[in-house]
Length: 154
Image (cartoon, rainbow, N blue to C red; front, side, top):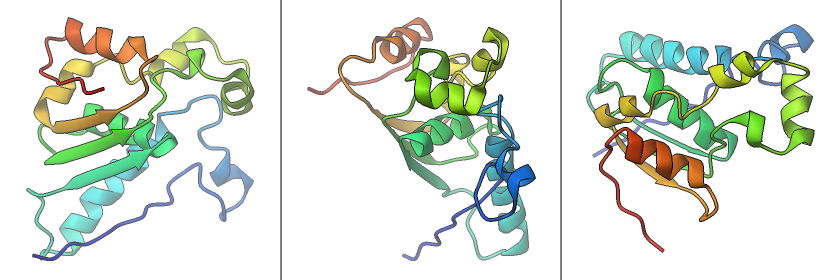
């Protein structure tokens, strides 16, 4: 068994100037997620030895947030499985110093556009391991409302 690792520096990443870096300002969870999914599609098309039926995605903190959004927005069963560790569910309820740094004075609709709990029923298409703290009541409630199967470990 072999594996291939891919690191994508999409819009919002450093090293390509301010315009590229600030592309997701006021819109976290939008263009950078689109870039991740589109780049994966292009790489799979370019390298036929890659098995598109065995895609795995992992992320921690903002990467966990991006992982959850990719699973939520990608086509049916795009990823075989995913691990999302300590994701922010909605930046409206996150630390103001961080959220306002990247979201500015965005309205509630902009925050809601990047909310990973908007379409949790889409998580049914991919095996998702969500690891988060005990005080994250929003994720469990949304998963229950969507009738998702999950286990809770303590």
